[in-house]
Image 1 (cartoon, rainbow, N blue to C red):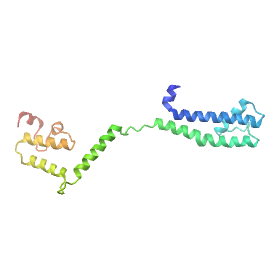
Image 2 (image 1 turned 135 degrees about the vertical axis):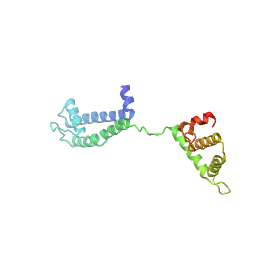
Image 3 (image 1 turned 90 degrees about the vertical axis):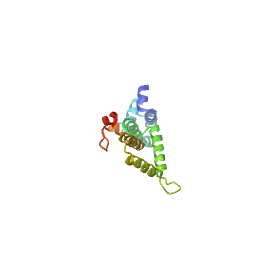
Image 4 (image 1 turned 120 degrees about the vertical axis):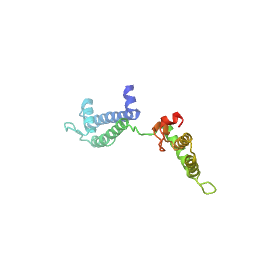
Length: 183
């Protein structure tokens, strides 16, 4: 029972209990109101009516019995079964792309950082653009290829890209092994 409770959740069990209590109560009221059926026949009638099967072998003739029948005819297919189906479906369908709380917080921080880079300073310039321009000037005007590679790696890290050492080839034609040799 605990395994079923963990699989379906408490809400499914609650709806199932409400369903069985309603059907049982309806069977008891039907038995009392009609007076000609025993408990077994009354439960048979209640379950077949709630599931809208209704074989017609047992049917109400009193106003109370008919009122209970109307209630059951709408309760089963209109409330209990759709709720059970929805609860089971919600447990089976899992969004594997859903963000965890930590990932959501990281995204908030990243967005705040991006907004900070895009907000102009008092003089009207953008800090991010000024930083990129400075990085590009350092890269373009330095003749030492090793330092240029370092500048490029810093630049790429700031942009959250792989460093060129992991990519294998640099855009200026230098290769990873040439950097290791000191060229």
